Image (cartoon, rainbow, N blue to C red; front, side, top):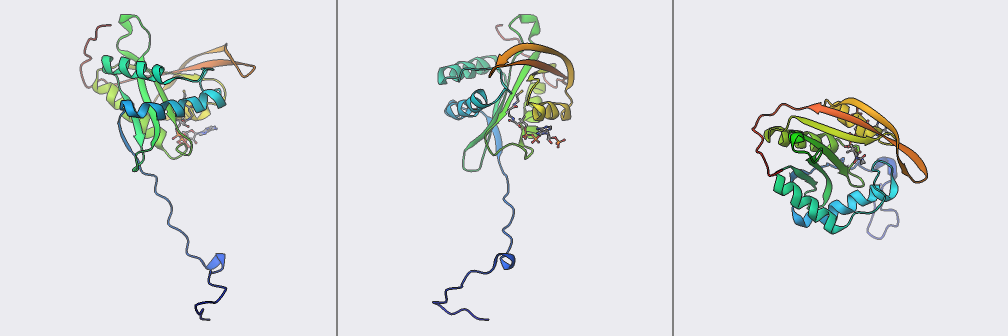
Length: 201
Ligand SMILES: CC(C)(COP(=O)(O)OP(=O)(O)OC[C@H]1O[C@@H](n2cnc3c(N)ncnc32)[C@H](O)[C@@H]1OP(=O)(O)O)[C@@H](O)C(=O)NCCC(=O)NCCS
């Protein structure tokens, strides 16, 4: 059957239409820039307002992120973002000091958050591995993850896949959205390939 211009039925029935090529999820990973901070803030605040994966209850501000960015830059610790080919920030991962006392200087705590639509596609693993690699090059020896004990199964699974082991739990240390929450501690011994510079901490 041929269709002439002006024929009303020019669209093929659904079952005869060619299947569209699957969308490729592509991204690159690079150090965060000051201009990324509003996007990082949006990603994090989404989880502050809508989930218990973070025990933060107050939405973070731009000055908060500027201060964190400056602190990590000063300490030489990695703050990475994954960006789409068009430059959209899809997610971030950072390593911050585990504790303030100087003798903890070889240990960091990781933080990783993906934006809407970026989860479940393997990006979390790539981003966290990039963070681990960067920390190893800096001579960091241990990475700790502090994870909510509720609704954070993807994070626990992700960390376990990358070699983190559970180091303990604390129940009922938090309270958000009217319910008690605890924390799961996971830890990974890194293989430092570089020498840790001693910062002014
Ligand atoms: C945690 C996070 C970074 C993981 O990144 P991701 O790219 O989405 O990771 P994946 O989708 O590959 O999931 C990782 C694993 O968790 C599993 N998983 C996902 N959701 C799960 C759920 N609800 N229950 C159990 N396992 C789950 C996946 O199956 C996958 O395991 P597999 O590879 O063995 O199949 C991402 O989901 C995220 O940003 N979550 C919200 C913020 C957050 O929780 N950050 C961590 C705070 S500590």
